[in-house]
Amino acid sequence: MVSVAWLTIAAALVAVAGDTPPRGGVAPWPFGKDVGAVAFDGVIEVDAPLAGAKSVLFLEYAVSPRALAYSIVWAEPCWKTIAFPCPPTGTSLYADESDFVVRQALNDVEWRAEPSAGPRGTFMHTCGSYPLSDSSLAYREGRGRRLSVNDIPEIEAVARSKAFDSPLPHRPGRPPTRISGVGIDAESINFSFHTERPADRRQFLYSLEGGRLKTILTESHEVTVPVGGFEIEAKTPEFPDGVVIEQLPARYHSDGRTVLVEFSPQSIGDVEVDLPERIRVGTQKRQVVGPDPLRRATMSNYRRLPEMPSAETIGSRFTTDPLFEREQTFRKLTARHWNRPVADVDPADAAWLSTFADDCLRMARDESRLPIRLKLLFMAIASDLMVGNGARADAEGLPAHDRALREAGLGVIADVAAAQLAEIRATWGRVEGDAEE
Image 1 (tube, rainbow, N blue to C red):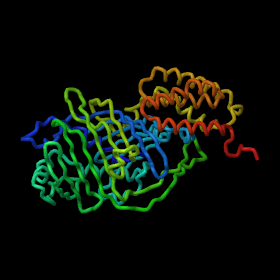
Image 2 (image 1 turned 90 degrees about the horizontal axis):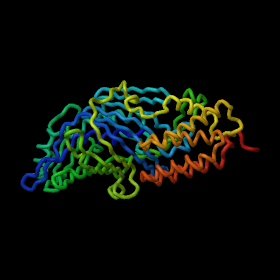
Image 3 (image 1 turned 30 degrees about the vertical axis):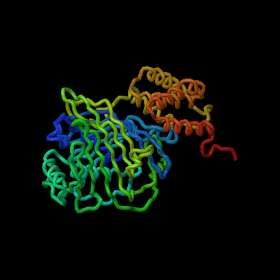
Image 4 (image 1 turned 180 degrees about the vertical axis):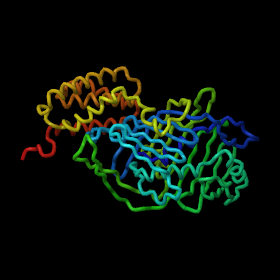
């Protein structure tokens, strides 16, 4: 599960604009413009330095000032987790002030929670796989800390006077908050705010260029908890015997985290606003701007929605998979035949997989959406391998899949996927219990 805590920064900033003209050479605050519900595509790269793992999620988002929803369309690399092809794929989430709903369409599972009114406490998991209970509480607390246009006059006064410990006006859902001004000039606004909890301390630097919002740099100061590892045993109708999903090690960063958000002008209907184009998260500033941050997200294709999708329509609102219903059969056959001798595949199953691979390859040639194209190619390759058509997989499916990742700037992920597939091919047919004595 991707952390809602850091992903909701896009929701918090969706109405930010930078059109306010400078006043006497002093930086203008980027007052918001109401653009309602907005959808966009997101590519999220997750690095886990302790585990040496890298992965990418492809999502479709919808956000508004009061709610957010997203659906994970695809994930890479996925060859090592073939028993659950791309586990996050098909997961959708909806959250607002009163609802927190997660739905896994592929396994027909739904999880609902009412965000707790109490404090979240220590957040133990920070390597990319978070308990849903922590995520739901993080959303509630994140909304409580969000700054609004009504807070700007007080912050501006503190920043100008360099006064300390000035209280912000009380707002429902936000704990008593105090701010410290660092400075304000024509190109930047710098301040920090904190509550009675040390982990709530945040430092903000707004950078402006030509009167427009360019970046926001925020640093948090956290507490330390021990490093550990954990795993989950899962059972579904497709896999009644269960499978163990090994989670990444957990660590709470002792040196805090730094988040850098870069903005670009976007036209949303008849309104031009500055919206996030890139978000990078690291344990310290050099990791945020360097090659290996903990998280890296790129947003694109912003568009206005007539309304937010509801908790009841998440998943279906973002359904873009042209083979969704047939994928259920593909998953069952994959669980039955993956990495087993081709001669053991039932003829009827082999015929179905061959036809399915043909259709996936045909549709992938004309598919412009990257995550859907990757998904079609993956299913074509896997189907070909199960029926012994490795020659076509090597000549068509695999090169197209590799090329799509590299053209998207995901060469590292392409290397990982290729290495994992090579290992699978080298041991094909020798599944546990089938190896020679």
